[in-house]
Length: 462
Image 1 (spheres, one colour):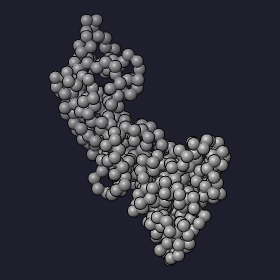
Image 2 (cartoon, rainbow, N blue to C red):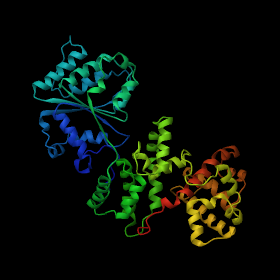
Image 3 (cartoon, rainbow, N blue to C red):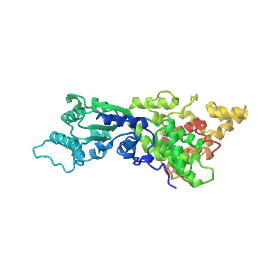
């Protein structure tokens, strides 16, 4: 039994390619008419996988596309632009030359002449070249860019001698606006492209991925498990695959035993950390603020960043980094919360604190009819301990484990009421370093308390 979700890189086989029916239909239609296409979408949304599948015969046949009259060529700018002394036009010509069947340019040919001659060679063989330029955002890495190059490319693409398909995170217009050559371009290169945006999966596509793939391997996800994965990942294909891969391994290892959703969540958080960091650091200050507002709203309305804002794991990341402050109607600062934690052994103090207004705690107090401050405080103590367990690391706890650091700081404060200098010595750090780390740990704990209700796992599955 193989894990059907272990595809963290480009999808290369049609049986593992899910969805994008409307986009594929439109792309093949545009290529038939010798048009140019700009595929725009967030990181790891599936742009490269879509390019790869365009060349697959079975997928071409599914969309009644006669691929024998087209030559698909691939150029990855991320790989090329990392080399020193690279020329963008040289890379384009090389991509065409590799498929030109022994073509040799005349010595007198300049680069533009050779480019046109190569296109004529394809035409003489009854082929229309389709140059797929992946990660076009990397164009800015090339040391020298000539506006005349884009004039030549535009002329040939506009006349139907060649079709271009680019993939990028940003729209082409925005990319070119950052380049120095844009002011000297007679006609914009980007205005000959049809724009196709790749967005997160629809609910149907996501459900098919989760149910169909798990059933194919004889270990089907339950409806509750599918819903839990969707809550954790949202509808971004890469996030879905990452969560589902860990969940599948957990189901396979546990057999008939109850699976640990908290373990799956923690492991996936670690696996996705670098991806979330990349996505966050790509945004400017205004874009980050917009995304934070979307995450805090958590509604089904229009969203500029649905691939991130609908994921509970991304909310975990924002809370862990301190970017997302605790939600809810609680008006409490990290400093005030720290002072309350110093009185953790006194239920009466806790029962009269602002913590009792946290929705999850207020609901517990109401259910238990905890009227007196001491009774309310015991509810608070229980919830704080529950929240603390949710921010622990993956393996067995130790004082030296980096992913247990926030937990350990709070653990020794809450359980043993240790002085700060004693905790610092136990964890092998200076007092000053501990004081710098304490606000982050406290903020994570408060964030965990405010999201306990939404992160509870399906009772029928656990």
